[in-house]
Length: 114
Length: 115
Image 1 (cartoon, rainbow over the protein chains, first blue to last red):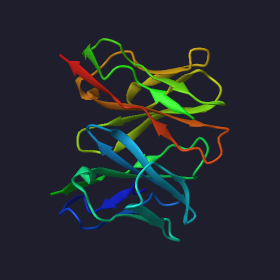
Image 2: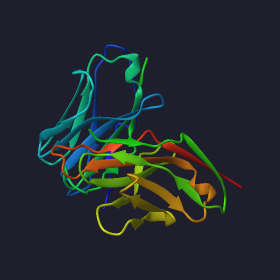
Image 3: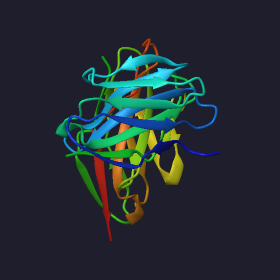
């Protein structure tokens, strides 16, 4: 079974631009979560989607948004990029959005904002 | 609110020796607990989880973890460390009774295994 895929793997953007990251979950998984990982802040939860609905949201500004499609694929968007948005963005999928289900992570998208 | 603490930023172990990576948690109800490992420039990989039942959980690559409800801990262990175990380890918790309860990760512990 194919794992979680994220595209693109690397991205360089300029301050003020916007970016869209894509995530394809493992087949059959209906929940997708997004995380931001930085050396200083560690792993921070962005949001979680299930059945095209946002179920949980972390403490990030409104510049960070996401959505999930009917095939469970998900995208996240960051508008008006800031230098501090440089990070590894990880997507994870699981069977369901709650309960004892482990999450499976993709390789991440490395975003650099200059 | 639920939380996870990994009190050690780094753990150093010699190859062949046993290793322990510590994790304590706080939830209002009962927890689901997870361990993940991250190798450089990679996403997190699931190692093992505790749902209910036996307090000793066995996982991938020879790792195991012991759930201790009275101490609210879920320490990761391995009887004999390998250099290839060197990586960043994350503990995570979800409250089984929390509605809309997200998975909460600790800050991570870097394991360094030397020859």
